[in-house]
Length: 262
Ligand SMILES: NC(=O)c1ccc[n+]([C@@H]2O[C@H](COP(=O)([O-])OP(=O)(O)OC[C@H]3O[C@@H](n4cnc5c(N)ncnc54)[C@H](O)[C@@H]3O)[C@@H](O)[C@H]2O)c1
Image 1: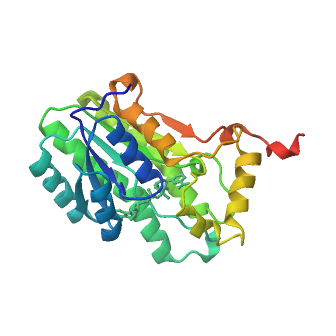
Image 2: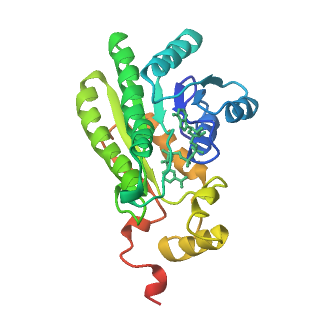
């Protein structure tokens, strides 16, 4: 079993019901002390009940002042931090020529700038205190290949690969590893709102996707992503840095949909 006992790990968007929830659940399962950051107060209250020992902090990770404040609260309350999971993200399904500047800026602020801001603040603290640490960035299958209406989202997730590679090189000499996890379609309730923007039958779409567009015909659950994050935060992965792992049931390895070849 991966042992994260005594490790203080901060998860942005950790109160979410999708990947964020899976990460929080997996880290708790492996014994970590959770620091959960979220912009949604209702979700944070629910998370506080679900993860009894977690420190829950309300913050918008795209704002430098709030990032500095949340790290300060975390250090004051728990002392040393050992890990950071950059998970908070927003989706957008819109053709590139229809996206507004405000939508573009908001998406990039949360999906890219915030990852850098949190990693930078965390790394500066570790360097100052001569401690080692671990960063895991949540990217997406859209970093590898995308679909119509996802140009801007895909750009942000592709940029996470560059950020992960570059920060791994910059931080390696301080004993800080940086990796990313790129999930495929994760089966979680909150996805249905987004899927409903292109189909009247989100459940049917998800079933078809699982059957035809994954090598393994089983939904990816949030905890499946969380357990890979736990591995990357643990010493079992101590020789891995600057890498991206796809948690996609093989989608990125398929050339055609499975139904294409009977
Ligand atoms: N759900 C999927 O199928 C899927 C697939 C691939 C990648 N991802 C990525 O996983 C991550 C989590 O997405 P999810 O859809 O699973 O949702 P999630 O359930 O993890 O929720 C995201 C959380 O982030 C919070 N958040 C949003 N903006 C924030 C901000 N500015 N500051 C602080 N918190 C903020 C939200 O309130 C929410 O609780 C994202 O980076 C997303 O791009 C998701």
